[in-house]
Amino acid sequence: MNNFSFDELQRKDLFIALGLWLVVEFVSFAFFPSVGLINPGARLRTWFMISIPLGIGGALLISSSSRFIALMHERTSTNKLLYSFLGQFGGWIGLAGVLFPLFTVCVEFFSNVKL
Image (cartoon, rainbow, N blue to C red; front, side, top):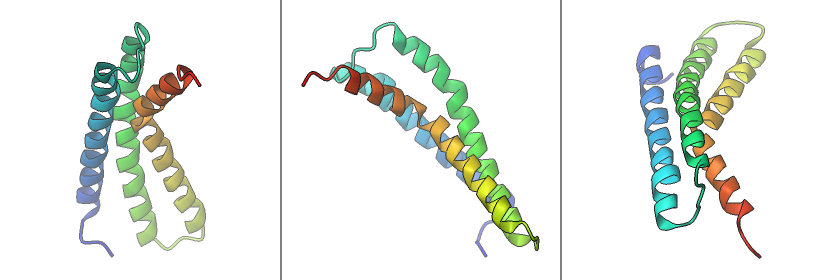
């Protein structure tokens, strides 16, 4: 058992995921270009606009999947393993949405590295 109710668990995970997304947004789109690690040019605005719905949607998916797993853990069902896998898969997809800005910055950085 956990110390949080299902609503508190979902709210806590939502705020943690949104906080992580904001930090990744700042590092990816403000810090790295200002330091000169990447020079994306006009693509920066496009990546930023794509990352907003992916980040917010990913945070929502993370929080709802954690609540889904907690609810399924409390139930007695024959398909617990399937529901657990679906909840974890949703969480990983949400995490990919939250970390999308970091993926784009890594691709930009490693595509311009001259060895």
